[in-house]
Length: 331
Image (cartoon, rainbow, N blue to C red):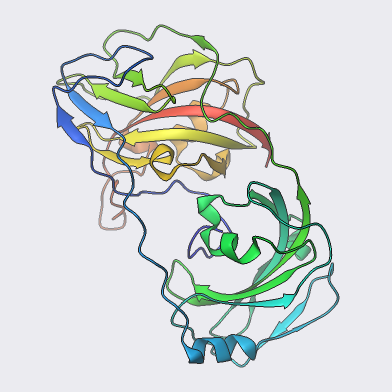
């Protein structure tokens, strides 16, 4: 699951990982669309290696060992503990080993889970109640808290976890592996017919693996309306706003700063299209799977104007994205 999430086991909003990558008068990456030589070049940089996760203390392990889980596998469990529960680091316990098929890297793993607030033990969410189990690829960086714990476990395994949520509260999660399927073959880049972009827009050059470098023309002004410019047209079905999509993407500021990219993290991102900024929802819906699209997103369709109430680090900023649409499915 995405590290320290509160609602669900993976975030539905785009990350805002600050990457460095501002340059001037640089050349494009080799291959793909030719980029202009003048302007601010937004080049994806590798993300820094994450710091090792802190190890749980003896008190953390004792606290998680004291949590009681009752009920048969396949049914929503009853999870009880003495509140408030505190841990200083993510702490895990295998409650049931499971007896089904063994989980391997890149398997499509479907899980049910129940989440409780550490402060009072009240249930925050349960996929057994919503009847919406979650499926992810084992090894997906968004699920960093689960990958190592579930690798090599079997269908039916139950994993208990206490961790810090994004709001810094402690949450207790009981995860059960419901089923596993063989890895899905999803492409890592857009593949289709190249479309000649309009003059005057930011240009995109592609490396051999499809990773984009964006050049923003000197003095470029972002229009007041969203710009959606197809660069590659795929041959898949049209994406709808109610679907979940899997994408590769790179995000840039007008000065050439690369602020977020799936390429830098080494894996595509999956998210519900109706759970992100309006510029993404409106820009990707209607495009075909397999396509690559350039989005020029004014602030009012991104993170809104900066104000006392809106202090998001990207508030008030116009954004540029290159998005490869790899898959779309029912949310």
